[in-house]
Length: 168
Image (cartoon, rainbow, N blue to C red; front, side):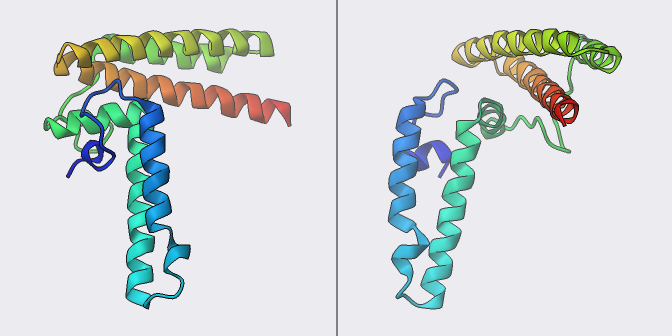
């Protein structure tokens, strides 16, 4: 059973996040370990494992990047793992390298803020392209865009870390 089936959702990229949230909360309530307090140790362990599994699947579908990786994996395409079946294209690698160099060279908060805004805009545009690629069943393009989204996500996190260190 796929994570989509588990939550009663179609196996598509552009899912209804509100429906996902409602299904998740209902499932968590049903198997919450507190409901099994008076049960046997085996039943309590099973409930704890089920709650952890549901949480893991929820996190995979809630995140656009993880959801894209998961959807691709259902088609036998691995991205974001040690065993990637698709490698990033040259343009993506150059783009990310240039962004990281710009961040490394940034000497003031205003420059870092501009880079953050650029990264967020680029992320949003990439996400839209990814939605379109999945909607058109263009898995090859979706795989490349998923890789790009992963790099952009890491870059945005690097900016946040830098801002956090600078604010201390």
